[in-house]
Length: 373
Ligand SMILES: [Zn+2]
Ligand SMILES: [Zn+2]
Image (cartoon, rainbow, N blue to C red; front, top):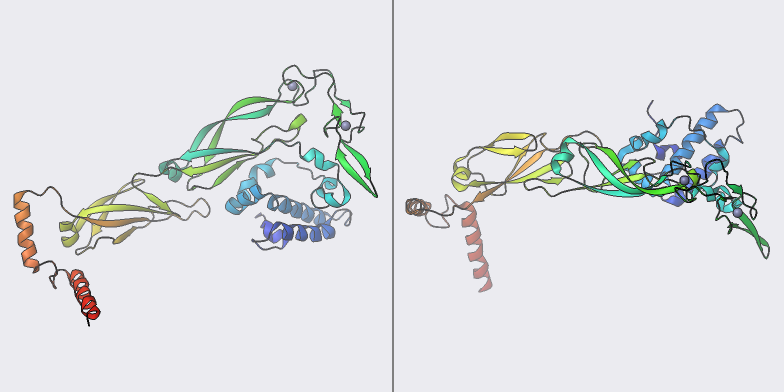
């Protein structure tokens, strides 16, 4: 079943800013929240969709990925399966500032997102490629499984905050929540730290990942690898890894959207008489017919020899720009032939053979005559 567009789900415009997204979410969440619709499975499903759309669209990285790749950007997240929604957590973002939500602290122990800059050649981009990348990162400690405690021991509940990770302070009329200074918000104290990670639950390590790059990506595109960022603190969720694509300059082709451009120099005899040449494409050569009297700068389109779009599968064209090359290193015979040819033109502004030159010099002449009138 096709998944509904996140913007549609929230009933907002694609250009909606964060404030508008929050507003739409608040309104819909109030209506479909399971607490308000006990036992109503439809409302629950709807609420999950709203929550998901909200979470993606308020995270600028995720939103950018969604705008580019649609739902496929988040496939790995959805495939996680059995992803039970914790309803009490839902209001953490929007209503947290109003009610004061202790869960926000836990959220922030999620691992950091990482960015990896990957440079590709145009050939790799066109065909798609699988790349091995090495990233230095923090991974969960294998010995203690991220808990940071020595095997057989458990972290002790913090005496200051009694495990909540937060303490309440009174300031005039208000009660203000603060992160517990003893346990730094974790709610527990590690008395017997793990020998490997010294209680951090994470260790520095390089990891190798094999990343499949779909054909057609371009400079500025990002590929998100869910959960491949830094490990979270104390076994919390890992961050994501964003692979930022840039494409190297190619010696022959220049890319613009899904079209490729190349300059094809031909000599002026062929430009005048016409002929057939071979032009390169990224998958072999193709024949290109040059009609007679082809002028420099003329563009010829070879359909379907551009780049296949990563978004909609549309294949671009190859555009060949003809450049007429002035002959160099002429021998005596060639020089004589050209000089004979020039005489036959009737000089540089010969009306019949060089109409453009003729028009230009006539225009110049008129310009000076008007000036001296
Ligand atoms: Zn504490
Ligand atoms: Zn450890």
